[in-house]
Image (cartoon, rainbow, N blue to C red):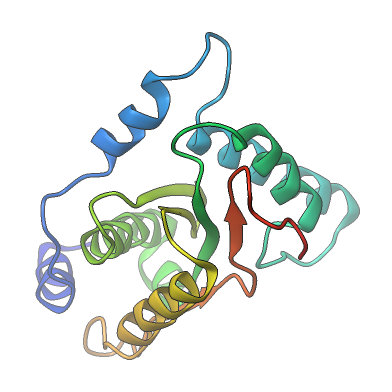
Length: 189
């Protein structure tokens, strides 16, 4: 990706320097030895899903299935930071960039858009990359309806902002199910 293209992307998607690494650290610090962090669990489940789909030749799904979500929530239940909502975010519209500039450029843009999303979310929200064009968001102390509204606004902003001239619009598809997490959450999907 050339410097002109990177500069154009940064003008279209201003991001703050706030990184989610400090939030990731908070999620990993207070856990029993040997227990996975939230981001590690999401990454492992995503790898498992991709491996199963690759073996069976299935089309790539846009959401993490019900069972992996329930397994993840069972691991989170009862922890002080577990109340809130969990959602999966998948970026689309990157195929033309990948075709024109290579997979490395699309990966770099995916990282940059993750920073842009991170700047839009609250300080307490956690955003982690779980796949080539996928992110997971954990929004503590959030209700399901509020989370769906916030992510729909994020999709609208990103999906209707031209990235650079000639690249068209980038789309942002969101998981259709935002899952409440915590000891008192209803786990029906």
